[in-house]
Image (cartoon, rainbow, N blue to C red; front, side, top):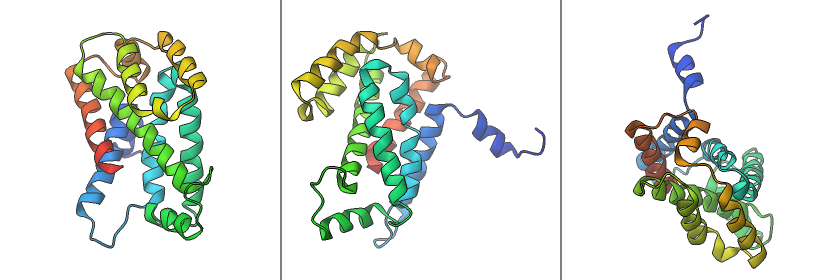
Length: 199
């Protein structure tokens, strides 16, 4: 392995689902073990969230809008981590400046990132509860539940049209370098469970 440690080699060989599950499990551990005054670090949260963008990319055109929005919001939050240490710091700053509801504020960006995490979580919950090999129904339900209430008719119509281009369950797993097995379902479940508790 040319001088790299076994941990470094394993990290390089990790699939996107494994990396996400591990990152959110680490955030979950921090949250569960923290003392009352210890808050979730913004940079750590952003690093875990950046791993989710791979999923949006694998879903194709129907979720391109979500991918672009999600990636830009995570990037903005990551940039803010140079001046704000925790998630609570950015919320406190926006409250103090009365900018919570202003477009582009860090609070709104955080809400949009959480919405992106919710979308992926609900999609994969649907993914696990159905034997259907197509993602269209699971993705449609996830979109209707999480994003549609906030989108205009034009955006909703474009998303519905794009749902026909979603990959099958097996195609998605292959794009994620996963195999079709119960073990992969377990990784998906770990991602869902920990992302729900973290955000």
